[in-house]
Length: 112
Length: 113
Image (cartoon, rainbow over all chains, first blue to last red; front, side, top):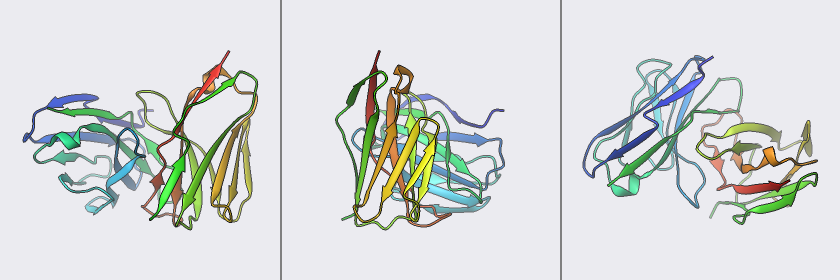
């Protein structure tokens, strides 16, 4: 029972580089989400997806791009990383029939 | 402006006591509220969900109350144990099945043996 996995778990990159964070879930959940978590802030929604090929912006989408060609994968790309994108990123998923989200273990990203 | 407030100071209690965590919100009318547990270096884990028409929900040693007049939820852990030490997040949703879950910053709980 793999559940929801994220890779890499840790990433250090430099300003201006492109970075892709991966998220994979084995439950065939329809909905998937990307959040960032910073000290003093709650989890903030970056993007979400209701199904394959359907994505929409959350609260803080600027500087990020997502895609969802397959139900089980939801990659998040930072097209040109900035220091302000240093954060812990969590992917989550849920079914269409429940309101409870299941979170991955997170990716700690540092942008130098 | 819309806000969710959880006590940013850590809560320290003795093993066996009841821990009570508070979640206050302003300018929201949530359809339901959830509580999650988060351990260091891990993702949040769902604990309880309570809907706007429910006053109280229980699960084992956990109890959640939801007062839409006071705009407040209380989360209780009875007979607390050191293993309950973690950060607890509250989260609001404006509608069932929605995509706009709003999370509080969390309260850190330490239970001393």
